[in-house]
Length: 59
Image 1 (cartoon, one colour):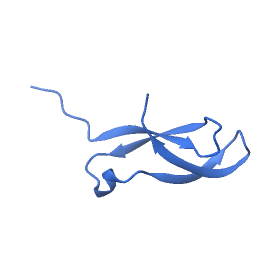
Image 2 (tube, helix red, strand yellow):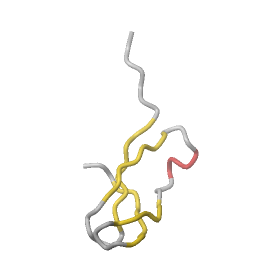
Image 3 (cartoon, helix red, strand yellow):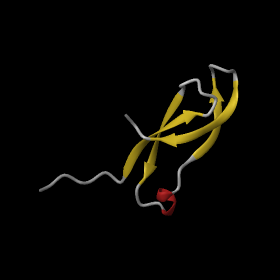
């Protein structure tokens, strides 16, 4: 028996403020939004405010 392929991948949400702060989030492969890049407004503690976080590749 082979291993089951994971139905999700991990992505990095990088701060648009340029602080280098990031969040890691799971994203499903089967979702219709898989081709779109995710963007969220989340809290960046290095600038003490909510900023835009955009999807970037995991290193």
